[in-house]
Each structure stands twice: as structure tokens, then as C-alpha cells.
Length: 223
Image (cartoon, rainbow, N blue to C red; front, side, top):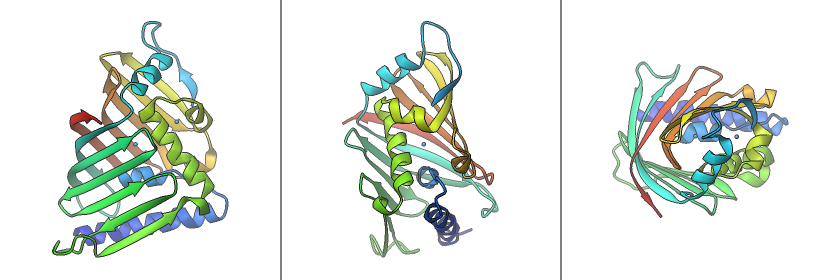
């Protein structure tokens, strides 16, 4: 399957989410399109708990890293492997730059989600740009804010949107997130985040329709 076909499938899904949002349905799948919160499902050992994790993450709230991602979807005959660069800063701005097997740049800030795509032969840097204003979709804005709070270690909004289950220890932990909201659960089944201390190294998302994304973060630098 070409990246054009895959991008069309993603666009169809995003349009479905936007339509759902217009009818008052809560959504978070933009993060899944980029790929990354919570009352407890269970507690962890006393020496490493959710508060410790949030504190550790807050110390590494601005970073950039290379990524290797694998996506599985009903629209794909085989898993799609992508690579590129991801940037997050503590000012609630996230950027994902796909370099292989096609070129795509996704920017999320407090105002909008902007997607730049090159044409199939890659001759032009940005042949098509799509902008989704978050002012039109308040819950989408709130949900994206919750994702950024994971990276920055802020728990208030996370606790409003997700249940969590933390396992492991400081040097090797896993945080599993499940939506509290039934409408949100129509789109996202779970998000699993792994890391060491305050550094996120792996993100897996499972959507309600069965689509999956696994992203490994490498060559990380603090901004």
C-alpha cells in the first residue's frame, strides 16, 4: 500500500472523529494519528508510585528524539514502518516529522493541529497543508492537553480523562492508560507508555477499531 492510500485512510478516520466531535462525542485519536491521562486501576510498590513518576517526568519536560514506529491497520495489507523525529516542549507544542517512507510533518499547539504532506515523489516540501482549529473542538483541545501533561508530568487533567495502571520500578516502568469516558473509549482502547526514570522510551496505542501503533524513541536530547 502506498503512503497516499494510507494517508487517505487516516484522513477518513480523522473526518469521522471530527464529525463525531461536532455531535458532542469526546475524542483523542489525533494522538494516535501522530503515533501517545486518571483515577487508579491499581497501585504500585511504595518505593515507586505515580507521584514519583509525574515528578520525574516534570524534570524532562522538553526534549527531542528520533523515532521508529510501526502501524497496523485494517487499511494496510502489512504493517507500515515509519521513522523520523519528534519534538516536545513544555509550552504545549508537539511536532512529529516523518522522513521515511514518506515525508509528513504534524504540528500540534494550543490553537490547532496542522498537517503538512509532500507529494508522492517528494519533489515539493509541502504540497498540501490541512489545519484543524482546536477552538472548534473543545474536547479535542482538552485531550491533547492531557497528552502533553504526560510528557510534562502534570497529573490534574490526566486524572479527569484516564484510568491508569503503573507497574515496574524507576529504571523500568510501564504506565497503561484507559479512557474513563465512554465516548472517548469508542476511539481509544488503551495507551501504554514505558520508560526509565523520567525518560519515555516507548509508546503503544490501541484504537477501538483494532488499529495499533508502536513507537520507539531513541537518540533523545533535552531541549
